[in-house]
Amino acid sequence: MAARTIDDSYRPFSTRFSRHIRSILGGAGIAATVALTGCQVDEEYVVSLDEQGADTCEELDADAAVRGSVGLSDYRCEGAEYYGLDTVEVVSEDPEFGECTVRATWVHDPELSALCAPSPPGTAVDGRPLVVAEQARVATLRRGSRWSAAVPITGLELNDTQRATLAKRWRVAGLYEHASIASFARFTLDLMVHGAPPELLLAAQKAAADEIRHARMCFGLAAAYGEPVEPANLELPGSSLPLSESLVQLAVDTAKEGCIGETLAAIRAAEQLARAKDPAVRTVLRALVQDEGEHAELAWRTLRWAVDTGGEPVKVALRAVFAEVDVQGFFEAGEVDETLEAHGLIADADVGRALRRGIERVILPAAEVLLG
Ligand SMILES: [Fe+2]
Ligand SMILES: [Fe+2]
Figure 1: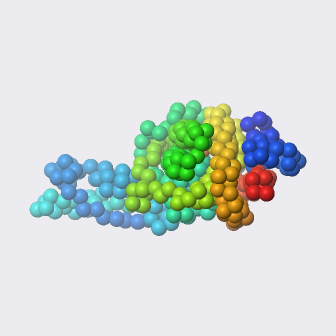
Figure 2: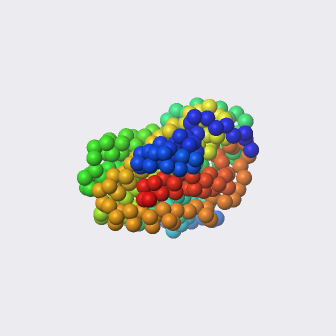
Figure 3: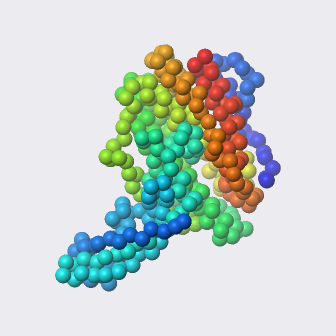
């Protein structure tokens, strides 16, 4: 394991950060000694030649036709599993109706399948999760480089397997960061519905812009290690995003997604930064630690306002949220060698340890100050 260096950017574990959060909440000086942190699917599609601008099945761009029919995506969730588009072939044609039957093969991708699974609070730890019906939503993916910021990694020492592993890790991070943009858009509307002050709205708008930058940096890293991919459609049930029904609900969502989700996102990024050596990866991680820390701060400020505005019913609901925060059962296995750590990958077990520390040292003490 790489030697850990703790520097100024390692804010989420610092006493300074802990004091800062607690001072925002009105508890400066209290508890000053507490440190803060397989398989495959074949599917057939009947494609109209007319609609695809082709005269014969031979002329048909079958690959584009399939991706068009599934929202331009090369990847998709099926149940709780994630599949990537593998092969496309024309299997039959019906000249009378001007149609071709195209078979697509989707290959199971176990590493990305976590994206399809429901995410309890605290487990989606790349940016602020976009939670709809208790499930963290992300966009589908397609090939493309419009979201890839130029990130000049080194990495001559990496073999193909290591590159593929890193590309997937940063692709997943990019998807969650991309979803965070929508999460902040909804958050802004929620704040407006409930009459929040302008400083919270300003911070929410800045945070959404930060998340666009984060997504571009993460997709940039994914492209540097593997093929360039970008987010396609962000599918939402009924093409809508429900807002919070009450101030209590807004406070509960903010606690889960911001105070827990983004605090843990900052902690995870800090843990990655402590081990990363590639200069470009370190630059990305420094930005993530800094910004996610600020986003966590925004969430705690929001709860301060919600408690001051809504009083006891808000407090009661928040106590229930913080009483349940736990990452037990997640992030417990696995080892990662130093080569991958140098490029921002860390073992699940190390993530789990850092997050549990963050809950004990940052989240629960801050909640205690807020709720008394
Ligand atoms: Fe982010
Ligand atoms: Fe964030």
